[in-house]
Image (cartoon, rainbow, N blue to C red; front, side, top):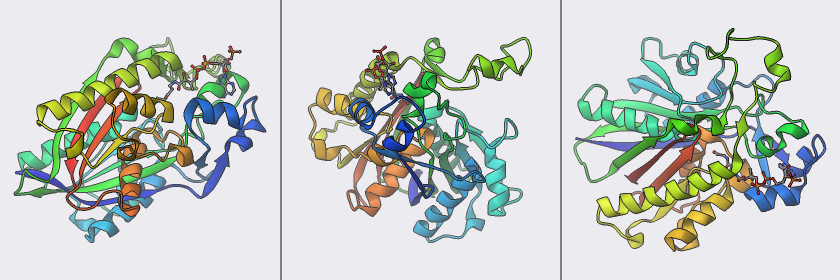
Length: 330
Ligand code: UT7
């Protein structure tokens, strides 16, 4: 039994925020941001848009692409680090918006690797026979949780809002769909990219002083992330190819988590692969964390960079640190 992808869709909010827009509120420049990250602009949701709203729009696009009705979905998995509320998870808010009362709905919290971790859960459910059709969504609203002061500028300029979704279905064939997924994590790096508070590691879950100490904002050891991301994504690519006895020629497209164009270029150069094999859209969206891979996959299809039958290698790395790769055949 296999798991095939029958629909892919994405949604990004209308509001475009350029690097020059950010330079009006913090000490930064378009040159600095582009040179360090390859980002030119990103999208920010409106005040009344939450993560589950973006996830809902991406789901509608995926359902349309799959040409199936929502009522056939048997399970909802939503990857996000920017939930609508602390609890319950945002998947139940998405479920309610979709009108799918009774369908199991859960969040996966593995940040930039969230989409691949979610795919692995869906694949396991489907191939164990538990569910036949599963919705997997990656969605983020970062714009409401960033520190736009000079102290937060290293992180704030990198992130954007968006959502991507896939519909997965049980299949008799193991030759197409999600062929393989590998996952990993190393918690000793947990504090190299994190939002410390609120949380039960503190004496009180929340105290007003946490805001003043900037504990509510993402904090990042940028150099450590860069070094580990490049090392791990190259290793994931090499290991996947070796395991499946494939070469660069067998892969039609590589979709890396869009964290930073320099990270992707570093990985590409280390692998000595052609530039045309690597999909890039970080210039327009910034880092959308769990949403970045499904948004890229959806755009790659729309731009006809891939078509049914194409083999795609997905690579993710991020906070945790967590990482993963997936080999898929569309
Ligand atoms: O999913 C994971 C997402 N995270 C990433 O992908 C991050 C990976 N890391 C990186 O890409 C890089 O480490 C950064 C782009 C975050 C930073 O680049 P860097 O070359 O490591 O810069 P840096 O942190 O060493 O900072 C260089 C300078 C500093 O000024 P001084 O101390 O040299 O005077 C920073 O204060 O750049 C300054 N700086 C900025 N300047 C303008 C930091 N952020 C900004 C900014 N605009 N937004």
